[in-house]
Each structure stands twice: as C-alpha cells, then as structure tokens.
Length: 185
Image 1 (spheres, rainbow, N blue to C red):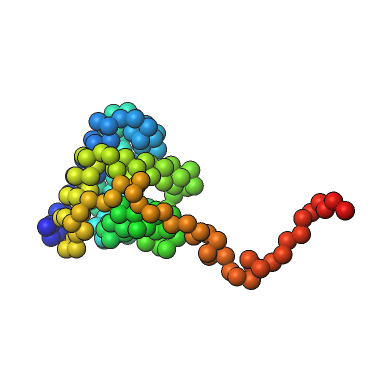
Image 2 (cartoon, helix red, strand yellow):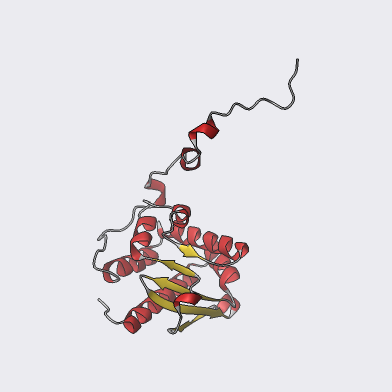
C-alpha cells in the first residue's frame, strides 16, 4: 500500500497510463471516442484527496502527461474509491453518483457529456475485457484498506434500477389531473 501523497499520485498516474494503453490495444469505438474527447486537454482530478493533473496530446497516438502540483481550487473531477467500487459493481450509476454528490465534475456540457460516454463505454467493455478487469482488481486491492476482493459482475447480470426519476417527483405533482388540449366532443 502506498503511503505518501507523491507515491499515491504516481500510482494513480500508472493506472491511468495502463488504462489508456489497454484501451489503445483494444481499439474500437471506445478508443476513438476517448481520443476525440480528451485530445489536447488538461484536467485536474482528485481521488480520495490525491490530486493529479493530467494533460493529453497526440491525437490517435494519445499520450498522457502528469503533474503533481494541482491545487484544490483547480479540481475538475473529484470522487473516492468507494464510489468507484459501487459504480463498477453496479450498485450505483454514474448519474446517481453525480446527483448524490459522490462525484464532482466541472466543465462545459459538451465535455461532460463526452466524458460520460467514454466512462459508460469503459464500464461496458470491462464486462468482457480481462485486462480492464485486472486493472480494476489491482486498483481495488491496493488503493485503500477496504477492497471488495472480487471482480464486479458483468453489466448483463446486474439488476437495473427502474423508476428512479418518477419516484423523485413529489406526490402532489403526480396527482395533478391534466386534461387533453384538443378534445373531440
């Protein structure tokens, strides 16, 4: 287990680099979408208070550069390992984590939607890509003291949550009777 901030930053940078290389080798739509969304961009992320600045360059030859001097005011994305575990295990959706404040993301809407698509594709690929599963297990086992200890279940076996939006509409709003605009008499 890593102990110092610099060691944790370096470990996080290593995992992100391996994630990019795994996706590059896999190719396909996930890789194309990732390259399109992240090329020539810089973002500051925080995972469990470990801050890392990531910049990318190179188009299809996407390369990541890491900086270790990010400040809390510069953070564009913030979350914790427990939230990642819940998302990968299918206990929490990315949408739910954003709504519940378990993920903080700051950028323009197009960039946020693009990153959402990339994350969704990576999660879907993780159900069948053993390299992504191994990378996740390594992160899960060594990032903090409470790993899950097992691979997440594939998306196709995860139970979906239904009626999330309708269950959050106030009851008095649901009881409003709406009459059709055009009525045949």
